[in-house]
Length: 279
Image 1 (cartoon, helix red, strand yellow):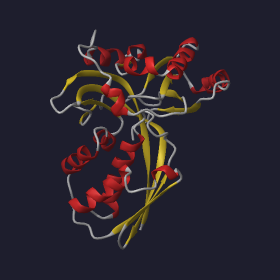
Image 2 (spheres, rainbow, N blue to C red):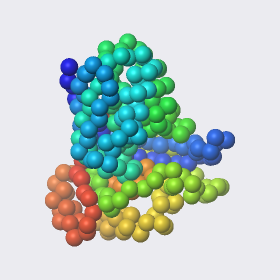
Image 3 (cartoon, rainbow, N blue to C red):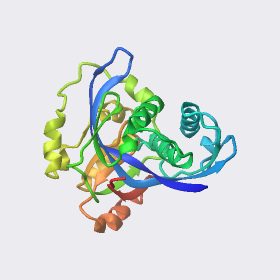
Image 4 (cartoon, helix red, strand yellow):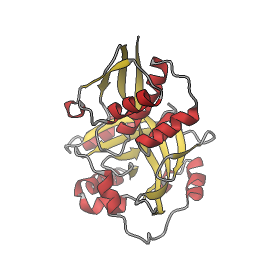
């Protein structure tokens, strides 16, 4: 049996840090949104073993999140069968777009089908939390309010943002989320209220998008600041996604793609044109 799944990236339309927890992590509030930049993952049922291949050779090892996910599911449900997986990687690594977390969630969904596992959504969410903070969001996808360290996911079914045109600009390097969070200093000034932001986003006022982590990233990475400055000059609302390094700009229509491509092509940045999706 062979199956394949699309594994979508995400952007953060809002990200505020609330406080530091006793376990060293930080509580946050974020509005996450899936986009149609996707990895593709192929799964094949085999007798035993866990075999993983990828077009990006840096993640062909047992330390990657897909291997960890397969092993966790296999042990949790006492599965004897094996699986062969091929990951076609399109989402840049450590880019703030959630590629690894999405791959983990997609693997959970695929293995439930491939291994015919009888379970509940609650159990799958619990497993997802063990893998990573953003993994539960990717079991839901679409638009969601995420709290805690990101593992508390509240779908915003009345606030689905369909077909919002997005340009993604990546400077060509990734950032360590762990290192970015180490830079957070309290107290944080002028903390943003999620309800107010939601009210404006409901009305399509994307200038109220916000990411607290920008102040702990941009001063250290001038190339990210440059991307934001260029998008500002072009008149686009823009925001760093997650802990970076990708910046997204919100476009008015697909007709702008060629124009903005022409404006950005003189820089050595990676660029994708995408849109929001409910998958």
